[in-house]
Image (tube, rainbow over all chains, first blue to last red; front, top):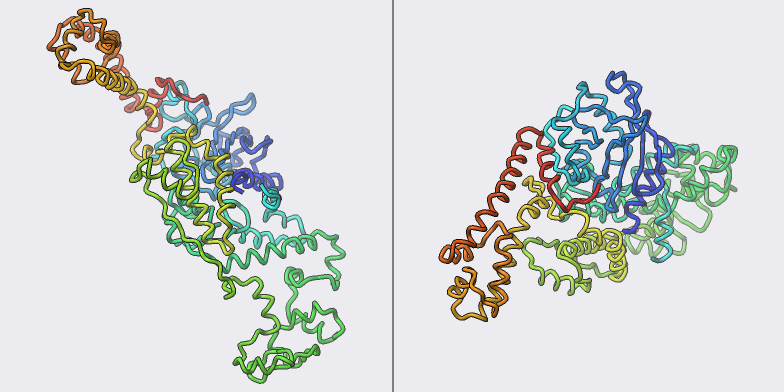
Length: 155
Length: 434
């Protein structure tokens, strides 16, 4: 039972995702229970994200859903990294939902996608976080080992 | 692993399954009976103080991890969890009924519409037939199959109905009791079993005939208060493996207590052997990861915004220095009765091939930027040259270090706090690849 704790839950989620997904979210690849790719779109007429599709990479640990998955935007030829004051240009997302503190096992892949959609929808600033260049140049760590400081509650 | 568990693991039924059937409303019934953490039907459901229900094992794991309810993030403790027996009854009943309903729901539509004697009670409920309608059908045709009459057995307000199969109505409580049992029924003040009762008893939990000795719950340990050997002893007392680094021992103990306590909540507790097997599986899939995955004092460190790896990289030299010094002292003591004198002689550079340890000190000395207090005292008394070499060496290293600190200080002022460690991170040699 314990062996399949994460994969069992993920297989249920996959089942559900294969059946139906909210508008603007689509599954790209889910061949195992370690890494999934999904595409998201911003559906309203926000000029920053108009007609763009963004690719998300989910990485799951064996302790999922007790531990959060690692979620980043993935840069592909036709999939840019969205401009957002909390998204670094290497795709790392600063969102409390994805950190140890803000994560709850009740969340799932679908709810994360929807949260990110709404995070983009609500944004009006066409900019990167402060110190983006330096962070991107120096960071060698995985997102879950970074100590984000969640200060901005407006987005 | 034994087969039933394996099969269970591959059963990936979901509440959304119902949406494609003619009974889409059952989807919400199904999902209400599932744990939000594992998305499976509740196993030993426990209710939190914020009135959310989860599987015992799921909620215990969550609370161990961050002490908050997964649904509403309210703080809670394992001690405050209470067993939700009504939910377990409901889940067990639904699990039993599900395959039958499922089969029924997936039959071709014509069969669903036409009432057939094959139908079971659950299906009638699913189709939303009112009891009144049922009763009418029954009274109009007594020759209906038995399953039908069973449905209305419990309808006590049905005065005109007299069952033919040897039941008589009790004059006191109006219940139908088998004719040959009516006397014992009256003798027991009508507390006898009604015809419907045995069925419900089969699924009931507080049935008195259950003398299973309840295992005692184990307390979680406060690991900062427990020394290694005591922890090892505790594990050994429980019959668990005592191998591995400290972090792994802690994780193993925590997982065991979680499994054990969840098992204590269960209606039918499993044997210790089975729990051990589960722990074994956990160890193979997650436990071995403990050491590699992350610094496990994570929560503690994170709170103080403290970067453990950077710290050890920064002070690694000092630690190595201390170890070297300790070794040196240990080697010096037995050989020389008058330590300080001989040390002074050695450090001035006079040849002394007899003792290996001081020579080692000579070789190592200039390489290391830090000195222990004892060593510096001695060298001050002694000749200047060795100290001189140290003075030459240390400024470069120190300035490097200072530069490093200044850089990271700049980082702090310039960057958002989220990236204040990026400078340190780039300086580390022991970083894992992304």
